[in-house]
Length: 306
Image (cartoon, rainbow, N blue to C red; front, side, top):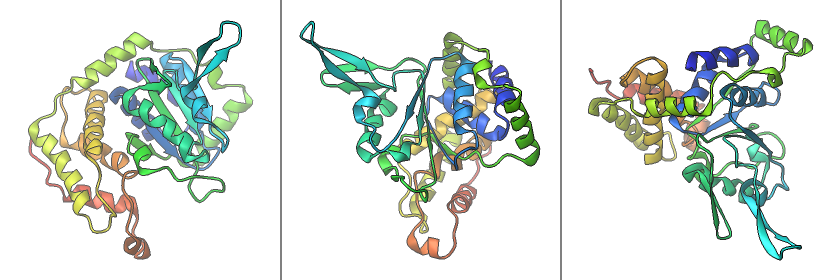
């Protein structure tokens, strides 16, 4: 199933194959993804392609400054005929949800996603609604330097398994995607190559990947090093360790193994950590780069022999 998904996604999303693999890792690990990049590089196309390929229902929230929490979670409205309140579903009640330009809405509306991202349910008034299974939020945001953006709070960022960047395509790929557009090769024409039950089975299998105590300790050592790193304002949370390990298990599954190896941890570590930390003022003034600091921290951890 995974090979079929990769093939069809890469046919319509021309560009960064590593991003496609990381999206699939998060899907199999039950995590959410934040994609930060400039407009027009294919963020929305990638998410729609994934939803169409796996055959799951797709919802989209276009965040703006006037988007309300009820638009996200749903709301109760009075039925004038019956005199009773009826619940109207919100935009998140789909299997794959695109939260487009999440940092263009207010912090109050951003916080409406906290419960559903952590517990896969929403509570409105006295009603609790459980999301479909599988459930995944893929949020996009413009760089914080752009006009009209609100930085995401730490509690919101911590709920994303990975933060990714697509980047500009190569000149050759840019010509291919332009030709595809001119020929009408759009994501609306994608045929599903998987299904809900097949995907749920793959998620269950990825969750049964074994990880030894040595490899688990290796992941824990990386997390501990970030808490001792003087160039970071603070280290990462225990949630970061859990998500990094789950992502590594999914990476092992994609690689055809039934167990995690240290390289699985090393491969997913920076993408799972860099949105949870920030550089100190002194480190910024010294010209340090966040990913470079994190890569050096990963290299400091002693790799176990397994």
